[in-house]
Length: 117
Length: 177
Image (cartoon, rainbow over all chains, first blue to last red; front, side, top):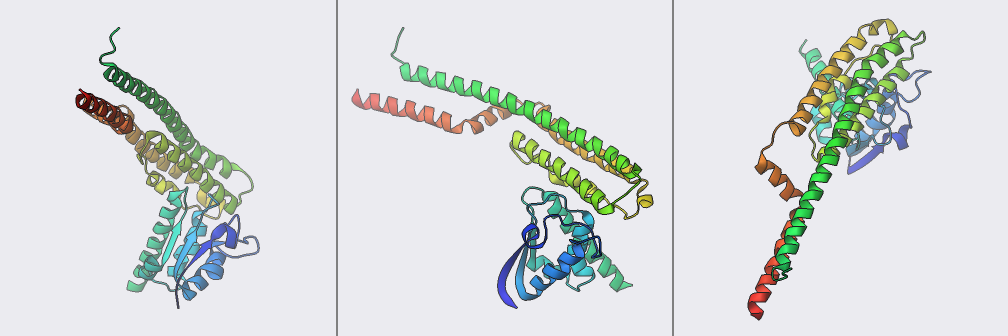
C-alpha cells in the first residue's frame, strides 16, 4: 500500500449526474458502480482517500448509501478503517457530508448487529 | 465658531457617523435576513406539496424523484447559508435538514403513499428550529451593553483609529507646548 493520498472528484472522475443505487441497464452512474469502479480500488491502492463531491448538489440518499455504506456492508471495510483513511467534502452543501456520515454509521450498526446474531 | 478643540470635534463626528452607518447596515442586514428566512420557510412548506404532486403523476421514476428531492433540499440549504451570512454567524445549522435528508424513499410508487406526511412533519420540525434560532437572534431583547459590544466589534478599527489620532494630537500638543 502506498503512503499517499488520492482525491476522487465524483463529477470529474465519475459522472456529472450520479444517481441511483444499483448498476443496471437504466442506471449508468449508480452508487454501486462508483464504489466498485473508483472507491474500492482507491482504498486498496492508497493509504488515504478523499472524495470531493463538489459540482453537483442532487446526490440522492440511495446513491450515497450504496457508495459509502456499501463499503462496510458489501466490501468488508471496517468503520474504524474508513474513519481513519476516508474523507469526503462538499463545500456548499454540508448536509451531504452529514448524510454520508450517517450512512456509514448505519452500515456499521447493521453489520455489527448481523454479526451478533 | 471655536476651533480650539477641532480634533475632538472631528473624532466625535467620526464616531457619530460610524454609529449611524452601523445602525443602517444592521437594519438592512436584518431586513434581508428576515426576507431570506421567509423564503426558507416557504420552500420547506412547499416540499411536502411537491412530494405529493410528484407521487400523483402516472409515471414514477424513482431516480428522478430522489434527485429532484435532494436538489430541493440543497436549494434550501444554500438559502440557509445566505441567512447565516446575513446574520453574521453560523446561527442556523445545516443539521436542521438531517431528517429530511435521511428520508427513505421507496423505489415503488405505492410504498411512498405516506411519504408526503413524513416530509411534512420533518419540514415542520426544521421550520421550528429555524424560527427559534432566528427569533432568538432578532427579537429577543439584548440589552444596551450587548448592543454597544456589537457596535464596538463591528467598528473596532474606526474607534481605535479615532482614539489613536486624538492621542497623537494631544501628545504632540503637550510636547510642543
